[in-house]
Image (cartoon, rainbow, N blue to C red; front, side, top):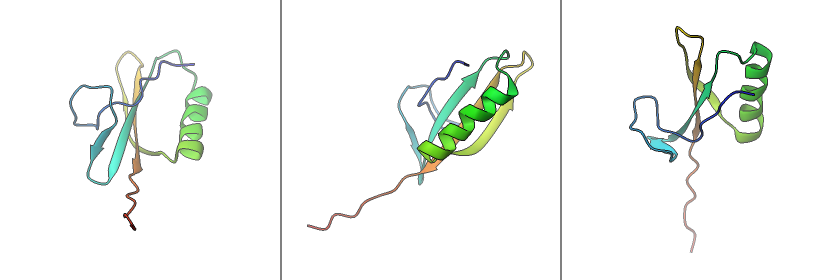
Length: 82
């Protein structure tokens, strides 16, 4: 399985290991090494989408084969009733 750093900043964001919030979305960045097979990457992304309600925001494939994937999900704000 690949190295995953989660949660991290938005695509244009600063460096911190906290969930980044921009607008109505929070972002999570996954870093997958070049040895990770395509089927494993697909499984990881599918798990995040199904169980964490994340959607694919951006993918960067670097020259060495490393993949960096940005996932995002909408922040649900709850209105106070009392």
